[in-house]
Length: 278
Image 1 (cartoon, rainbow, N blue to C red):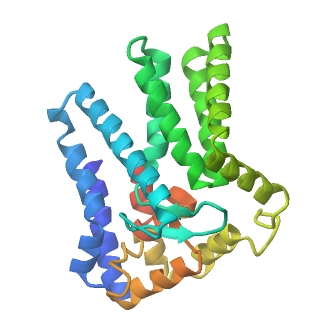
Image 2 (tube, rainbow, N blue to C red; image 1 turned 90 degrees about the vertical axis):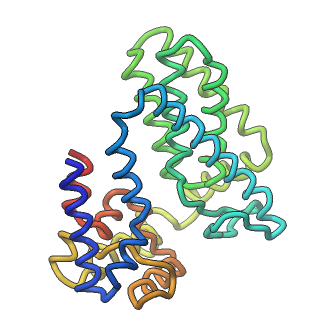
């Protein structure tokens, strides 16, 4: 499976060169993080499950710490990381690459809380930290889906039982405690108001997520080969006309990452994403 993923990723690099004019070296460099994943998975047999869990634990903590540090420094216009800022509420809202680690922290912590009796306090702290970062990101769909899938995880492991009820009470208590933090309360209020009173829903044709979906499905591709093999990872912001295109798309708020694996398939191709899933 890893070999197929590698082959399809190389196809996306070639596709980028043929269809978008971006050099093979540039696309390869832009895909370095994906090649890093291949390296990690190729050598996981050398490490125990405990080693991998420790890696997830510490990487999640490091990401959440960096996000919180950047969050509080951004008001002083200090950037310690490369972020995309969107000042829409009293406290700045921004994107920090690697946001999956915040969700991973929540799922990893909840899984450990449900199946382990030891060190639960450590994992409860990790769950709180992950939830705090996710709420500070202020993405409605991400926040709602995270909570729903955490509930599903509870039911999947514990089933419908009295213990599940107490776990649910515990999670609600954590969310309520976080809501007493002023910036968290502001973000929760912002997300609710944006959904109830704002125009940013799929009922509005001008909603940026809807516009993004329409663009990437109807106007982005030059030919069917790009649909199959992808257009390749863009390198930098001004390295090529293709990179400049993605820079302009980001400025317009058209992020392919907003559509998860569907958006990722635009870059690395349908074959790569299907292979990742199965």
